[in-house]
Amino acid sequence: MNRTRALVLATSAAFGLTTVAACGGTAPQQAAPPPATQQQTDPNQVKLTATTVGQLGQVVTDASGMTLYRYDGDSANPPASHCDGPCSQMWPPALATSSTATLDGIDQSAVGVILRKDGTKQITINGWAVYRFIKDAAPGDAKGQGAQQKWYAVTPQGKKAAGAPATGGGAPASSAKKETPTTSIDPGAGGYGY
Image (cartoon, rainbow, N blue to C red; front, side, top):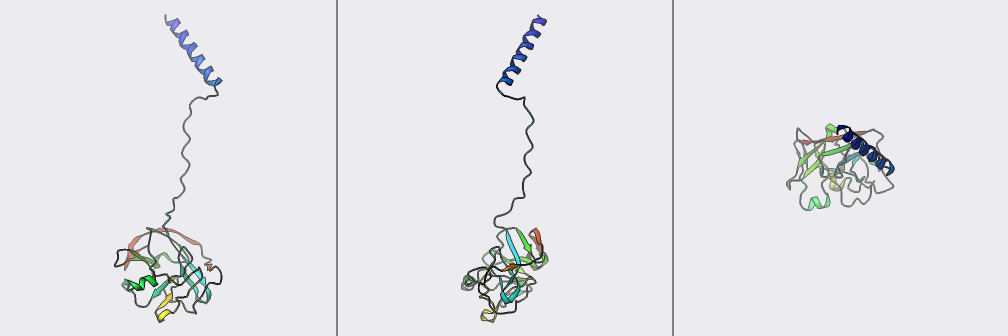
C-alpha cells in the first residue's frame, strides 16, 4: 500500500506541475519589497526665500514670491505683533501653516514663530513678525515699502529694506545661495523657532 500511495502522490504532483506550466503559471515567489518611499512633502509647508526685488535688494518672499514686510509698531524683543483687526486685513500676517519650513538664503536661526491673539502662529524674521501687503498683486511687487513710514520689506536678517517701492517688472530673482534643507519647529527664545 505504501508503494501505491507513493505512486499516486507522485502522479498527482507531476499532473499539478504540468497543469501549472501549461496555464502559464509560475511557482510562488517572494513578494518584491515595496519601493522606497519618497520623502512626503507637506502641501502647507512654509517656504521663505531671499529674493532681489527692484531697488530694495535682498528681501524675504513667501512661497508665492510675494514680498514680506515688517512693521515698526511691532516689537522684536520680545517678539510681538500689534497689527490686528483692520490692520491685519490690509497687512495679512504670514502664518506658519505647517511645522516645517524650507529656507533659501535665510539663516534658520533668524526664523521663528509667535502666537497671535487669535491663536494662529505668525512667522518672524529675527524677532520681527512678517506680513504681506494686500495691494501687492504679483511677485516682485513691493508697494508697501515705506508705507506710513512704518512698513518696510524685511531683509533676510530681519532689517528694514532701503529703497523705493517696487511694482512688478517681471519675476524677482531668488538668491544664488543653496536651499537650506527643510527644518522643523523647535521652541526657541522669544517665541517658537523653526
